Length: 445
Image (cartoon, rainbow, N blue to C red; front, side, top):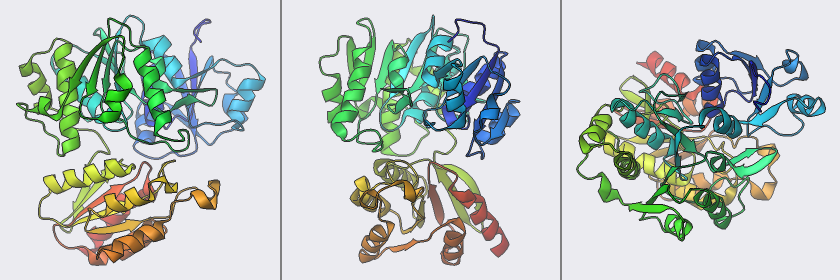
């Protein structure tokens, strides 16, 4: 992709968290960067604007009239997209985001890939900050916005480059998992569960993807694997590189500023990895002590009328359950309301119908909104929110289906009491429900 001189880069689907971070990184390196997307909303829209990147609303052939030297195609983009069709017709220079990262940012670096179904963003952010606070100045690509850094990606002055290794596919023209592009020297493999029902038919297919990652770690490399996860142990069996297993106990002795058992595993993996990379326990603890988290991970969006409103990216039943437990730990003896938007490609489907019911039952009250893009799914595939609500009510929970954010706010606010906690679970903007709720609470105070 860099066979010819590249000065201008256009990102198709620029508002994805990783796409936005790399676009900002390319802008800082001196490239002229533009991008297009249909779903333009904060925090990514404001982040891109702050970095001087022009976002073109929607996808049209005219978006490429400026003839960019390189076009980066986001993995959510499909054939039929006018920009993709023009790029193919005119044989323009296209690549996927993982290819760009591999060819532009990884050469000469020690690549550390943080993988697993859950905890990737937090673990990558935590490890990056521990290394930064120890003076190692790592480069990194994180699929979120870590509070300790100005953005989710940078080249770094040190010899390490940390990548959040996603098992989702790379692009419409490359159905391998993203992480196979990242030339790993060190891998953290935290957990493996079934997810991404739109591209993986079953857990066996997910395991095959992770085996591909294990297969490309060089013999001098290292995999740090969760010894308490049976799927992880199965996938790393027979690896041709060095292998170290961690357990939750490896976080003991450290003061970790993150609530929840899942974050104990994240911290244990990161501590072991940091130690393998040469850091002392004192350096690791210094990073833990000054870590300030990641946006959209139990993020406090505001407090009005004594009600605390949290935003969380969790959209897998395990992640929702673990986050609710962590919220209970951080906010003990307080009523907890869970607002859930079935928006991800997995939770829109009924593959986790029972599991979502179990996870949401851990809250005191539950509201579920309309399933996103319902028309794209066959009736037999769709999640049934009404069935979840009925099941929750049968166990004595206050639970309601409301089609949108406004309807949820209207029904929820009269039921809220001082010291209540409202947790919003969505991998999208949920129609701005956080601000709508806070505004209504402010008016009612």
